[in-house]
Amino acid sequence: MSVGLISTGVVLFFCAAFVFQGFLQNEYLQYLLTETRRTEQAVLSASVANVNSMIQDAIVSCADVVTDADLYESVENIIENRDTYQNASYLYTRLNTIAHYNNIAAVAVVTEDGLLRECGRYWNYSGYRDLWRDENLDIASELYEKVMDRAERNTVISYEVSTEPLLHED
Image (cartoon, rainbow, N blue to C red):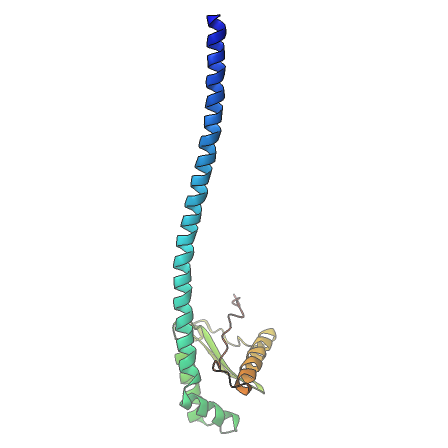
């Protein structure tokens, strides 16, 4: 009888051990999921702050560009066939300055007739020019249309930011 009682006790012990092991596995899985979510939230929170800062810099930079009366006058003079050295030089210098703002790598002036001028941050060193050509010029034309549509509707935002094209020539 004592052997039967001992074997029953051992079986009950193993059953309790298996139930407890299942409980511990479930609790540990819940702990891992909770910690993973908390870590993801911390990373996402830092990323959101970083993206918001970058967007704020872009908005300030773009607002500075679209309110530059001298830049506007220079573009208007070139469009009206007064493409003098002074106007072209000022426009190139100003576009080069804009291309060196915080998160801006390249800038282009597009009119209803197409691309007027373009300038890029790294073009002096890499020799890479003509970013807004071929299929990329369609993107610039679409941006121009969006800006002109906003201007006709008198919307407060009068610029368009694009991350296209995303691929570098190399």
